[in-house]
Length: 284
Image 1 (cartoon, rainbow, N blue to C red):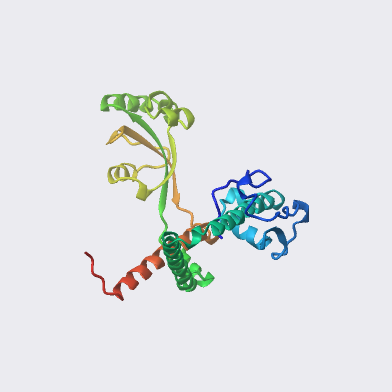
Image 2: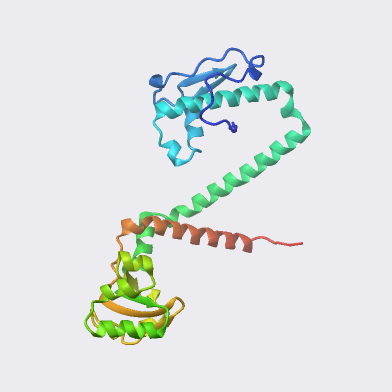
């Protein structure tokens, strides 16, 4: 049964609107009486019963932060919400609203949409199974991570200034023996980085750098800096190379969620493309 927009903070008693449409309602089971039996009856509204299974189904649609609440807190509140839902439905049926043609048309359309959605989900889930086995995930990991050539990473510092003239002043300071971090702290216009990291921008893969920067730093040894400033979109930059390494290969466990997501995207896309090939389409 579809739920209403009532929040979890509903008052214990039902709205007086329903006082003449329902028989006395059995109070929800106390939190300490809740068991793990899915058929345990938590409440009764006229001839309708509300079980733990009903509450669990409603809870499954909640955001994670609400689902993680203790059962003794969450379940009584959801039970109250389901009581209101049932009372509303009894009132709707009593007024015959559910039998009106316009309402029936909307209901049938909603059922059709929901059926199609559920069938699509079930179809995709079934088709995805062979591609998400441990063996398939391992194969994807081997192909896209383990057996890939190593990616070079380089650890850099930078000093960014506004003009080539200031860049020459910076180079003079470095030539005179002042440390790169200290000069970066004084001259770099990257204010946040210069105060916190003194120009250190961490490890970057070669793929993250543009060609002029790669050419400028490719011949540097550790702790050497570029002898000419490089013009970029954000200013004139002098780089210092700190170290280099091959990018560590991530473990299967660390990238498994990413692999599953990527496999799912690729497989679903291929299924959609294949389904379009098997039908005759006319667009107007």
